[in-house]
Length: 425
Image (cartoon, rainbow, N blue to C red; front, side, top):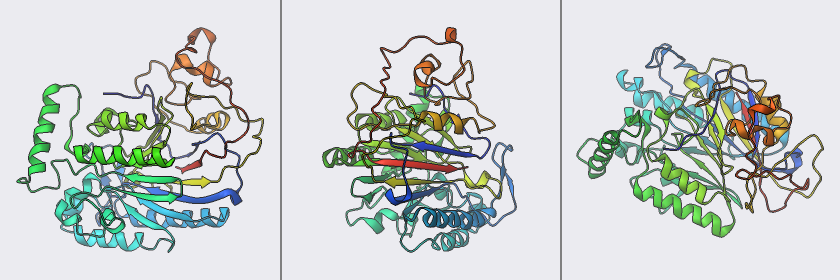
């Protein structure tokens, strides 16, 4: 199993801006459109409680008010930038499993959907399924519900799954995954795919390669892995960019929250790293971020159910039209690979300044904590990456040959999609 050396954990809600492209200087009249994302509302008409570890507070009824506030923020963003949010992606766990215990699954779902439908008329509402959908409903029931976005968008949809694509612009596609098609939740138990999934889960447990093998994490079926590969091949052929979305993280979370077959999915994304901009998920309620070695951003949204009233645990991705213009001297950019025709860039100075605002961070698998660095960069690579970080020279090894950095020309490339990510945590 592959894990990031470090990932950034959002314990305090703050703001993080991540630029998917080297051209971070943009004005509102360049924007083509935007994407809004939110996750893990887990609404239930019950009193507030705590998570299953009895640690984090959960605000079950507050989910409806959070949706309203997020929508207001989306509308304000449209007004400010003169653009439209073309789609709103609901990343799963719309209602909580306690709705089932409360015998209010249908009522809670209807109440939640009624609020979600109050979106701007020009925005497409895209649903992804999480584990809590299957704590409340059988898959066969979800397949005939309005949560089945695949059926609504595609005439050739797979009748047993909610995986689909959505064309955001002429050269940017969303690819949305269904992690619980190959699963042991959401089925009655006599289905063939359930029996196969049960054998797979038992096999993974016997291998003992992973400390936690939880049924809630889900896995992609072989059919869906092949479908994902086909969609990414289309992106490569058509020179499109892709943002892949799924309920479960594949990199940016502790191990026990990662999807099974994460390595298979990562290998696919890395095979097409010229096209894949980001992987965005929910599920891990504290939220996290990392940039992998193939320049793919991994963003895990905080769970709305555990966010205090008054916060804004959603993100907006602005899609801008690149223009040939000089970048400001305030920004420093470095190449992450020797050969990467379609480059994805981070603004070093902006990232440092914004990461410094985060009050509480935790970095996995690291003997030392540095507060001003990209979470996916190893300590021995920090000197090359951030010339402004205050780290003693004797703590940094020269790894330039295996991880080359080259200064980039300060001129944008018309063929490169500019995506600016706003995380108003």
